[in-house]
Amino acid sequence: MDGLGHFGTFYRIAFPLARPALGALASFTFLHSWNLHLEPIVCLSSPTCSRSRRRSPSSSTPTAGPCVTSSSPPPP
Image 1 (cartoon, helix red, strand yellow):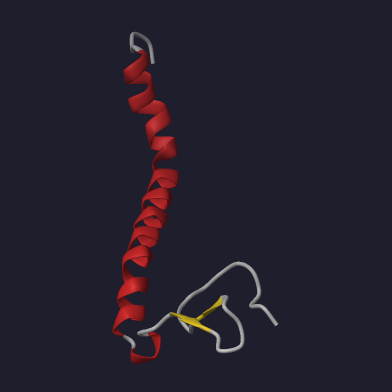
Image 2: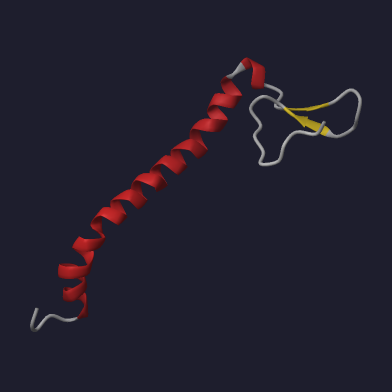
């Protein structure tokens, strides 16, 4: 495209090619923020999750409740 500046070249060539990737990024960003908002609401409104961190009677380390997730397995 003869005579276009840097912005014009980006707007007419690179931006249309990147539009599907930007749409996917926007979808994943929305879903991530929605899950960050929804998970605490579900856990706080559930009667079984009202005390998500409780102390085990046999030890002084806290045990995970039903709504608390972690990347490591629970202690034996």
